[in-house]
Image (cartoon, rainbow, N blue to C red; front, side, top):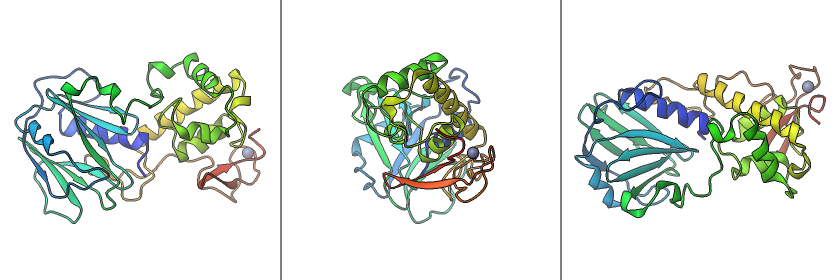
Length: 287
Ligand SMILES: [Zn+2]
């Protein structure tokens, strides 16, 4: 399943290839125009709204991200895209032959943005600007803060985790995966960040003191940043938006290493199940 770093890699790739903008500089020019919306299969996680047709003739102004949602911004509204379990969004200068599961094309002046999703758990949801602020959309309104933005930077990150966890009797791993405090700490990154912060994944979130949360927030930021830099992915057939394979390339410290020696202390890395997800951890390092 694509997690936050993979979605951010897709966003950056599309921003370069589709919008022609590198880095995070300001928008230059009007943005490319959509000529046609082609929906071959409207039944994704939710049916695609035929009102999406309104973007035909409109300029794509920007591609942002909130949690694991890509936000394609047009003057009449925003197309909210989630890749689900198996979605890929690739921009082609010349449209290749259609494959099974190529459900949607956005045909631009200079190429085609194609959405493929074998399992169809992904989503394309149109939010008209007339419906009010995007942040209030039902898919976005309950999301925690962005881990790599100012609201989680420096001491704010640890403070936020500390405050959100008071009174919570849930394990720290479940607390992070829940995403209400901070978004984007998925299964892989959660195991890694907890190891790096030396916190046992089963520790009750409400009992962790502020200094340990400060350390954890820092390790979350580092883990996610490094995964983005590595163009990492947890999905085998994941591709970055420019078509380059984006396998999870971060050198995991514990994730997927059950039975092997801990890289830090030499003890055996352990595996446990929490809420039907695998957790990897080291008894020697994490308390
Ligand atoms: Zn260890």
